[in-house]
Length: 303
Image 1 (cartoon, rainbow, N blue to C red):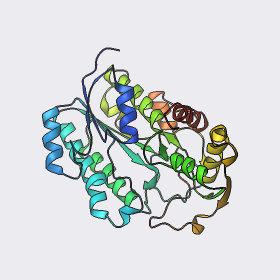
Image 2 (image 1 turned 30 degrees about the vertical axis):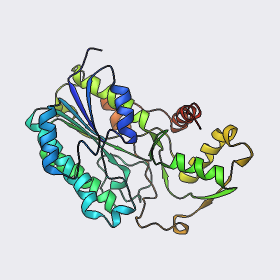
Image 3 (image 1 turned 180 degrees about the horizontal axis):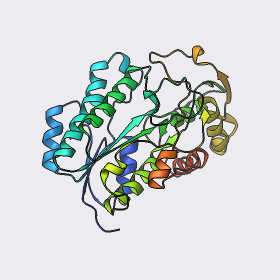
Image 4 (image 1 turned 120 degrees about the vertical axis):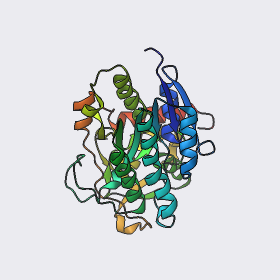
């Protein structure tokens, strides 16, 4: 592939940001911005930095992701997740750039039976979900050349995530209680980055017609679904060689047995049919994506 136009990645130190940098390396001039170089809570700084960098593509991987803390930090969560995406959309439209933004399954209340589709009624249960929905609405209001990818249960070989928490707790405890009545699709940052790269490549190369044909919201998760308890069991089954006799037993509990400040949706399964139909992109099954991450972790020092 030829060298692309300039790509700005926000949240470059996060799980998705790091995966994007690795995936886009070699095919684009990538400018990575972390919290220090681009504070998404600072509207003036966003405008200034975007105009200085003059990107042709903006990939907003930055977000306020502390779901429970957001209940007590509403203003900050909305500044980063709600206001900043709208400013990025305005700057993208001003420069005729492409904006790619990641949203979440938490925009839904989880009450539906079956996978959620893009046009289903949103009704977030938490401040975090409401702030992410505000970001979607801000981008859609500006319109222009944009893609919003809703995803779920994101994790990677590094950072703060369910996988790494389970591996740590599994090495310390003989048994764990894990919620079994919340169902979703664990999705790796690597799979998100690959799918984003493939779609962006198609847009750059003119494969998907005009923006009016493809701009909008799409669901993007690994295929399949599982509960948190089932995911934990799969992690320990696959990581048993490293944990040896220390692999814990995992017991299912109800959400009501593990109260948290923020309410979580019970059904977070997102349908990826629209993504596949429009762009011909399908992410790997969550099981094989998990195998890949665990293989990566096993090669790291002090794994």
